[in-house]
Image (cartoon, rainbow, N blue to C red; front, top):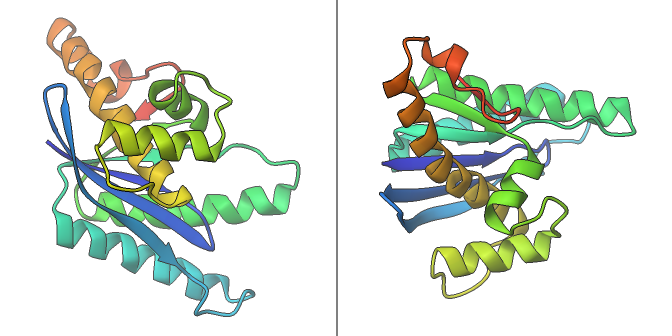
Length: 182
C-alpha cells in the first residue's frame, strides 16, 4: 500500500510517500510545497499553490490513502485560523483525488515514531531516517509528513482488523485515540 503523509503549513507544507508491505516500510519520496513565491498577504494565492501542489504530488506518486496532521490550537488564534485554511486546502486536494484520508495529532505521530509525544523535530528526523533506512536526515517538514505516513502504516492494520470484526460504518468505527478516518 502506498501512503502519502501531509504536514500542512501556510508557508511550507511537507509531504512524504512510503510503501507499506506488512511491517516493511520503504521510502518513495518526500519534500515540501512552498508558498514563498506569493506575497505574504495573498492568502488565496497561497491556498491555490498548496491545493495544486498536493494534487501534483498525488498525481505523480499515486498513493492509495493519505494521513494528515490535525491542527492544534495555538496561543495566537489568527495563526490557528491560517493553518486551518492551509490544512483545508490540502484536505480538499486529497479528497478531490478520491483518497481516503486519516487524521492524526502531532502527539500521536511523535509517540508512534519516536516513542514519546514531546519529541523534538530533530528526534523525528533521526527516527524517520532510521525507520526508512535513508542516507541522510529528511527536512523537518518532510520528516513530519513521513512520520504521519509511518503512523498510518501501523494504525491501518488496527483499522482493518476493526472493520473485519464489526458491522459499523468505516467513519464510525475508525476513531483511534482522537485520530479520524474518513
